[in-house]
Image 1: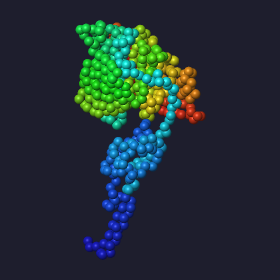
Image 2: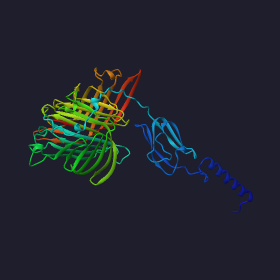
Image 3: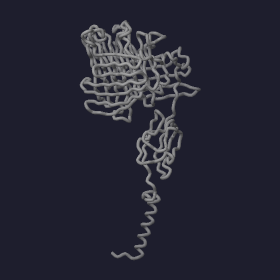
Image 4: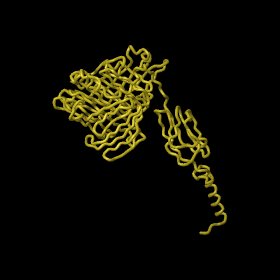
Length: 480
């Protein structure tokens, strides 16, 4: 079919007009325009910062427009992976000035400042000698453990996993004089997978004084560092840095772990039977909250690099508190989505004969909250614990599945009682390793991962504050 001259002209005009329209609508790129660099940002709402995770080309920060409130002091000349915009609040919008490309907008939640408890240096000081073994130097101490836990971060291959590691020198009566040296190593996934277990070894009758057969659990300490080992696994270091090496078949799995722990703040004594010189107490415990954890984990040959937030606890107990007196304990270290950490512990002095039981004002219970990885703490002394659901192990032995905690300041906590702080927490433990020692001991342990939900409220300058608390906990229950 032949086209007339006028038809050709009309078609050409239509093509030109269409091209102009598509170009102005940005459906067609201008080949003369510079190609914008690709930049990816990760929002860390808990720590109020934006992190650069990917840069496709060389680009200078002076060519990036940042609208909003944030601190740019840590930025260099060029944009590189790992750069951070800190102290962000409100909405942050980032664009490329030369091309007008919009990299996105991020809204940060308002930072709530929880009233802090008054602490004295005595409560937050641990010497190198305190980190070593007490059962060797103090006659009354015969139960001691070094406990580490971690919740792995969302930006590593084991996102949402937890790990629990503990080197335990148990009292002989705990497990009916059989195998009182324990190594606990467990890893739990959000999907319910469980790896590792509890390794137990019989201690010689004379313990560390045995001439022919040494205990499997070995300890040493000096001004430079302490070390606790169990066969090929060990922890060593000195605050604020520790190194954990796990190597062996734990339960049914071959586990290799190399983890470094760094405490970002001073420790906190949770209990000591001596009000002064707490480290000399025959019953004592301290914790480091919100530790930074980095390293490698291998499970049955699968190797991954990990990072996360962890806790370290060191506890020793007098032999006068035999298994006939201490009938159980709960420990839970919680890492929350808003960046806070909560520590809960409790001792029980009566058997668990009922699946539902309420404990009020137990002087051995602890609730400690930190919003800045332990730099400051808020501890509440008026604590009510309710066990609403339990697993039955033996006829009169039950392990808690759900624990509800209500806490507020006691009348003696004058520095924070005026804020009317109220904490409600629910700990739900389902992805756990359950260990039973039947025989005569009738001892059970439950170790692993728990879901945390709750809220905290307070009043400050006639303003009501309420924060929802959601996160992951590492829990350790024992019942006798």
